[in-house]
Length: 286
Ligand SMILES: [Zn+2]
Image (cartoon, rainbow, N blue to C red):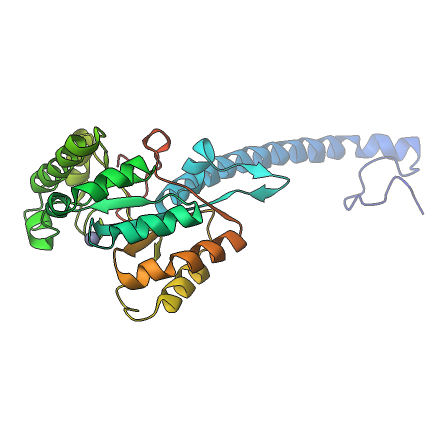
């Protein structure tokens, strides 16, 4: 077997030709070599362009579809090749008469959660709001009216901002905390337009939707189904779980915590310093 010829499909290189033969093919050889160099240069350039293109697509897609890339900056760590998985429990529409039970349950499980509070309810259960903050949970903003028409029909952000600021003021009076994170009732999409998002960001408010709907509004009589839904839907390293201050959600807490821990999740409470944009409408400034 000719060692010089192995794996060389066009037969370049010494192959035991006579000197004369070599001389005769030097001209064409150089041409082929030059062509090869040119085309390999072109291939490298193409690869660079393709890689750059792929990079852009990757970051845009990631930002749009899941916050993994943003998170990597702040939070995601890998240990021995295993990605740290974080779940955020979020409770909407409180405070309610059930808030103390939720807080008790969370304390028992040693887990912190993010609450999205409705201003008018804060007036009814001020002690629960204090307790939320005292026990290390995050008191988020969830408007005054919780009304689709009032908040979004105008296609302007004025009412949204005004209502969130009203909630913020109430929380500040009670707890001395001035939270910036809001959860749009019914979710940001299709309600928050691009210009609304800009104004909301300018008003120093942030927006978080959710990545897992627990379906607690659907499984009204079954905490088991609520927990099963959450656990089976948890697949990403960063999950925001939508729950409501409802009995079936409260009863589902222990199973949700156990099930997600078993899947390798840690629980986190929203932290303004590590904010990661997460909204359906994909506005990066929120
Ligand atoms: Zn709500």
